[in-house]
Amino acid sequence: MSIDIQQRWADRPLGMRDVYPQQARRRRQLESRLLRVFEHSGFEMVSCGLLEYVDTLLRGRASSEAEDWLRMVDATGRTVVLRPEMTPSIARMAAPLLAAGTREIRWSYAERVYRRTNDPASLSWASGKAAESTQVGVEWIGQSGADADADLIALCQTALAALGLEGWQMVASHAVFAPAFLEAHGLQAETVESLTLCLARGDYVGFRAVVGAVSAATGVPQDVLDQLSALNPLDADLPEALQRRFGASEPGRRALRAWGELRELAAVLRRRGLADRVSFDLTLVRDLTYYTGLVFEVFAPGAGAPIALGGRYDDLLVQFGTPAPAIGFAFEAERLLTALTEGDWLHAADEPADSGDLVARRPGATNRPGEEGSAC
Image (tube, rainbow, N blue to C red; front, side, top):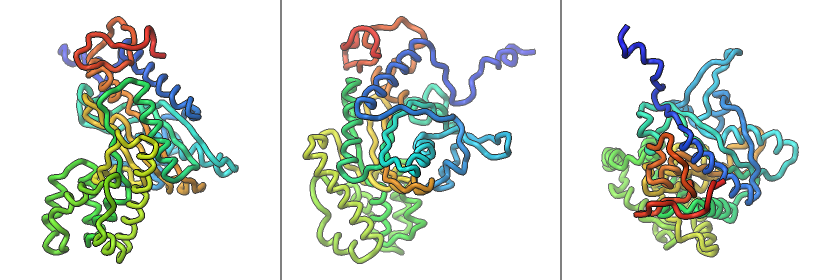
């Protein structure tokens, strides 16, 4: 028997990565610090099982979103999934409480999530394509409106400040606006779906190619992506001519309602001093179809994918029999650690712990300033 065959017991499944004591310590400290911030804002920690039924996760979302799920069949013959995210599980847990009369729920969590991937583990945590990752987040059920949206944005910013992370930027949009904007320009639903998929993937070359292929037949301008990118609810209202045009069609009216919500949120953010670290990019489209309003992502130097993602999902709870507005966000712990440690966390195996493990490393610094001892 060859040495290669003999040593295959040491191989890790694709996308899996071992976490050694120093790495595990840093990750646990990060989880603890974030959960304390959430607890101080009234969010109580919950946990749930690793497996969910496919039927549960498909409520309120497109079947195409299940392509990256890891499935198996349980003892009853029903198909179960390693949860790819936490929001549907939280909705399932909350539904009986809401049905019994609970008016508001504030929950936090720190849980592993799983996705199918073809990327090597050495790159996946930083690139956002991990087979296994840790989400630390909150879900707030029972409140709607711009003030509640701003509260969640403020909580996310407070958590980032508690970690000492520098150079981050929050990007916000509205789940309804871009699809309605495109449809109001005369594009068919199938084309709009293809274009929004391109936006969700960040494939702007593909977006322009699709527009170019249908522009002559539909009259949609070739620069529609540039038009969408130029809109900023913090700066100015929609041009009057565009408002009149949109007011004449149902897709246009949906776009106007979404725009109105963004303008209201922008005013609240400015009034509360939260707008400086928020930029609006209306080409931002999330790949989860249950979002109904605000969506946002947080980016930081050193991480090749968002370190935090969130949004409003007011129609998801009705899929579990208890209509209620809801909003939430989650930090991707491994990506956040990569940004906090300038990538050191990805490579360190088992080295002595230093003081202030979780204080962000500043450019040019040889030691991490901050608290003495454990960040917990």
